[in-house]
Image (tube, rainbow, N blue to C red; front, side, top):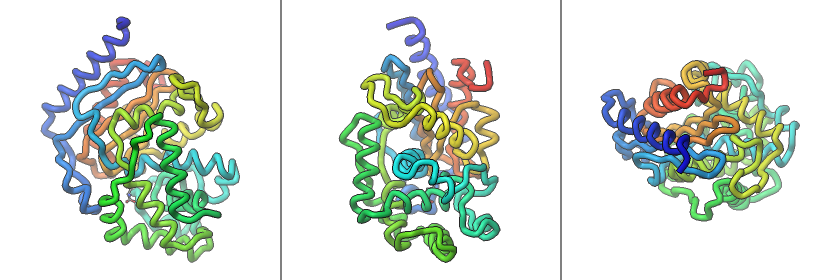
Length: 313
Ligand code: GLU
């Protein structure tokens, strides 16, 4: 093992030990009943470098609900389907509003600010669904996740999907509101069915870090050589992750961590250090913006100790 790899392994383990001691763990999401059952003591961290070396600590192999992290992969898929025309359907500006906010939609006549707030991700799901049955669209999303992670075992947690389907009143409102502006082409219940199910994909930190490799290495998985997107597209997806990936906590995440990242209310975060690493962290307790509290603290420590901030050391 090279010195830098053993250094990374040591740092990852140190950070996991430090996080285990912290009393401030945030609050587990409870608006999706199934997510409320997860213990907020859980913590996992995995870093994959360009040579395929993996540094991991904590609950790194335990699957959790990736929730909004799935929006990175659906954005990638939708861009592959319709190219830059996607930006006519959804913007790419930070919203400065909560992830499930409806107010901005009224001012902006149903066009969501960006693909990572719920309204935007629902519009992106509509694009993937067009011309397909919901089951086929979901199959396409799952196939893409398995391809980029190079792991055929990735699956949907049906109990989480059913739980959100029963209680997702705000998302139902958002989708109906967009439909009223003519922004969704497909039936609202089909779009939401696919949306709730892709949010309910379960992955471990290891699988997620593996899946993020195409974003860290200009569209190509450096281990398999498989290309997922062009270098230009990977760069742009990273830009949207940096500016919009943490909802109204995106500025704070950029300030503290300095890496493109996407969070989910399951407590996961996928972050990329371009050309250096793909990183996944999981700690289910959330801050007031719905982002993993210790996930952010751990990534701040990692980025600082490794000198990985894209803004300089
Ligand atoms: N499925 C969740 C919702 O729509 C995703 C939110 C998130 O992870 O931030 O409310």
